[in-house]
Amino acid sequence: MVLVRRPMNAIVCAAATGSMISSTTSPSSPRRWRRGSPCRATLANGGDELCGVIEQRGQRLIDGFNEIGRRHGVPLHAQGLGTVFTTVFADSPPLVDYRDYQTCEESLRLRLVHAVQDEGVRTAARGTSFMSAVHTDSDIDATLHVAAAAAAAL
Image (tube, rainbow, N blue to C red; front, side, top):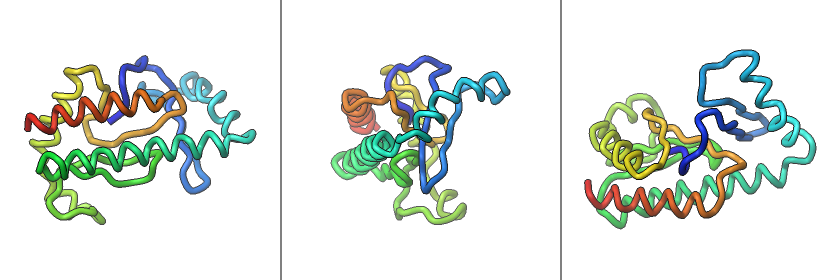
């Protein structure tokens, strides 16, 4: 899930294992790639602290989604890096390959996606989430609140 109410062209930055993902929510083009330049420059010039904050906030989401699944008795599972991760419904996590992914309950995931989108949480339909420097602790709290209510209704 990508977090609460951001502009469609908001730049998403992530750093993982020494590499960085910089993109917009629109298809790639040289002009859109240049929009990511401030993000790349920030991370290249002492952005280690910022990357750590992004990683910690993403890990809070991963942990929060997993706790929501346990609390509501649904097989909701999040896994990945704090900067980019996936959310699925799986009876035997963690997922390690495509065969594992094929066992996930796609209908439940889509119901969750629609429920949180109805409450204003922007999500990627495939279940992949990208953390950004603009996501605040309040955004994470709001996202987990909406996800908990949606999970309870499944």
